[in-house]
Image 1 (cartoon, rainbow, N blue to C red):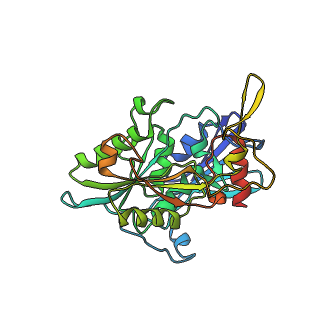
Image 2: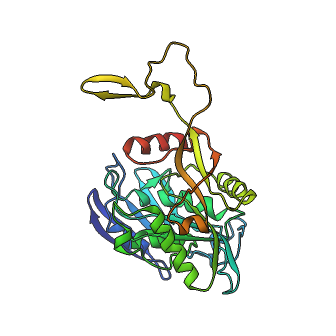
Image 3: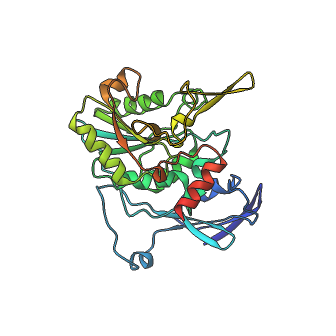
Length: 323
């Protein structure tokens, strides 16, 4: 076993490698750890699976596939947390050329982010952000195949270490700030179908919704399967009520609703907003260039599982909820 070291924006970085380990540690060591106030150096350890670790407990198997041969551990201060761990789940085996992929899950995760650089591999609760979504998807009883679409080799390595298919690196034209998620998803579906398989429905799972559960995913798909011609989108109750929403025009505060709320006013009915966690889209709607389409059905999620990480405050809220 060899120990090597390097540097990053926050200090020295060291990692341990041994025969059979992946290249993830080398990639991580080249990236500045994106953790707010962490001052200590990051330590990255990569070790292959071994018989001793197998003896520590039984391994459950979901589907058929290859087992990850590496584990990545991030150490920040006194906390050692598994980041890309040896996942006990496995991605489904690739279907035969003549068999349909009923439900394809696409996890879009590009490397660029203006507000939170490197957020998709930044550790949240002890593991890279993207692994929260990967692990929830691999436990799904309804998803037939999972595909990660990324332009970042580091994210691709993390996904593969968890047993997920990353058959390509996303073209640069689909990795810009202006690129549409629907085009990224269509690109993934087209790639899968060129291999002779067929996609009936697509589930889009954005890594920025780490608290969405496997139960949420399966319930959304079950709702979609009741009427496969309609999409299903996840929503959460709006807070505060739209009756309290305001805008400013020429230094005047004006109610969005057109009338000022009165004390004790309550909305006539519950109001919801898209939370970005789950989109279940029929193939025909996707072909039309949309993830939602006409007459979508709503899957309601509680606010505490609907966090959509877009900035540092969102990240801190997610950390607090995980604790």
